Amino acid sequence: MKPYVTIVVPFWNAATTLSNCIDSVLNQTRNDWELILVDDGSVDDGYKICAQYAEKDNRIRLLCRDHEGVGAARNAAMDETQGKFICFVDADDFVEPNYLEKLCSCPDVDLVVCGYMVDEYNSKGQLLSSTDHIEQNLTVVEFKNRVQLEMAFASGIMNINCNKLYKIDIIRKYNIKYGNYSINEDFIFMIGYLKYAQNIRFIPHALYHWIRVQGVATGVSSIPENLLQIYELSHRMLSDYLNSAQVVNRIAYQSYEMLIYKYMNQLMQGLITKQYCFEGLKSLHKSPWVRQAFLAYTPHHMGERFFYWLHRIGWFCLSYRIYKKVLQ
Image (cartoon, rainbow, N blue to C red; front, top):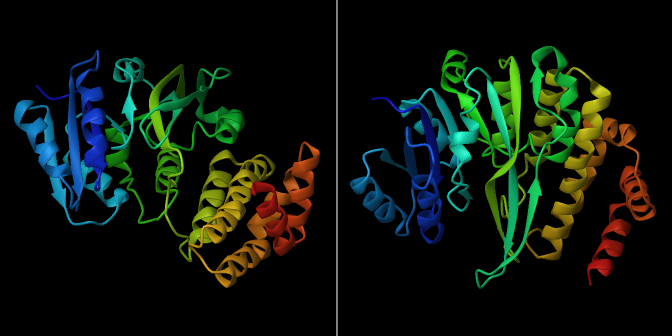
């Protein structure tokens, strides 16, 4: 019998976390699933660990590929899926036992979104904090009312990939794929899917555990030259989807602000040069998309207003010196 839902877990050198991730799938209260594990060219014991699981459970399949990135790995799995629905789990995260049960409780809805937890651990593996992110103000949003999603996007609950259930028929009908982006590939995929979704259902439960380790950077370890272009593409796609420039500009401001501090943090860590940092920030300041976002946003408190105006007028050197001193 074909599985009802497919779970896709791409992995690259994730041997230390894979077992915990896979075990959380095996512990699901719903059993009509298949798990596709995609080895993205690992050089650790990840493949061996997954092969042992696949040997014991015929619902688990293992694909092996050259290292091309998480987007290509997910695309490969989507070509192989047998389920009616699909969801994605990262190899260093895990899910609650009722993750699939809750997500699959709305079969007539095109996209189902659950809440998630950000779990922060120290380097010894001790849990320091767990913060819930749940959308409690929305239930079902229809295609014609998509502007209601402003707060869901602003809060970040729409921005990650692994708290969502997609319909395979929609993905295949419109040939929706992950792009070859170093960051935001999940957001761009999700927006591409949303164009064809007639409704969205929010589950008010935190069912996905997004793991963060203290002192370990997340996302890309360096800043690629096309990072601003990726952010602008995300901005443009969301603007087309919500069809409200003012709303989207307010949301996009948060992303550009995060990008500014990403440059500064990378400089402080010695991962990029001062020239690369400030040339990147200068390009960001010149972007018409960034200017629109700054004009649409209103800072809320004194400290935020101070840095907001420094960044708006392009005084990044002064901002960096003050920011660095505050962190010290």
